Length: 315
Ligand code: GH3
Ligand code: MG
Ligand code: MG
Ligand code: MG
Image (cartoon, rainbow, N blue to C red; front, side):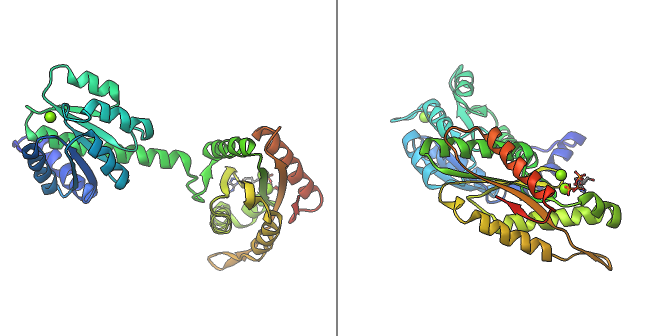
């Protein structure tokens, strides 16, 4: 790096140190038919503490990508035998989004940038540019991938419980329903609600309420991991969706879970309390139903559980 004695460059240098640490060991792929260029760029990137894979053309690059699913950035040349960089970029995009694998096109051709970007490249740098620019773009693109990943995580996961947040939960439920309807599979939709939770908050405080929800979320994650889709769709309301063979035995597992929750000791400071849950568990065929209708019927069962005195599962 060329570091000028101006505040911007010094700031960049400081950020770069943090970046180098964050990106250390990140896997990248250099695709170029020139062995000299390949070796040179690889050495440059290894000095940035990146893990570098190499390929001599697009065909080899696709093989390397398939064998190394952790590669996050592809630096690709334009003209290469067997498969050129633009085709390679388009092929990568058929299965991997721009937030999954970044493509940085490295070429000397006039007008190549637009072609690359239209094929799905994240960024472009000319072979005539200073290596410093190439390095800046490598780190910038890796940072953007991290940012996109973090944003998605924030949007999809409920912060308190680590379960799917509302929107993603209903999306996953719809996906599951579509597959199950095609396969003619059975489905189960469970709606689960903490009993008299307003009282818990009123008696022990909001912090204690949060703690109870966090512990309940942890128990749900443990008791119903994949292929069960578990989410928090409301304040003290949780949902489960499952299709196919896993539907069998779900009512029994749910009853055991209800019992486990009943015995969970939630303690904050020197105070201890217990919570109970009610659940509506709908078993249905995915064919001839919509996700909305299944949720509405599960909700009606949950309402029955509340009516019948709470702390119970109605199937
Ligand atoms: P029911 O048995 O009929 O479900 O009674 P309930 O009190 O649980 O139901 P209600 O819907 O009246 O109240 C839900 C309460 O859950 C109200 C709200 O303060 C509380 N709540 C919702 N989200 C959160 C949260 O994130 N943290 C805490 N601490 N409380 C929450
Ligand atoms: Mg070439
Ligand atoms: Mg509720
Ligand atoms: Mg409630």
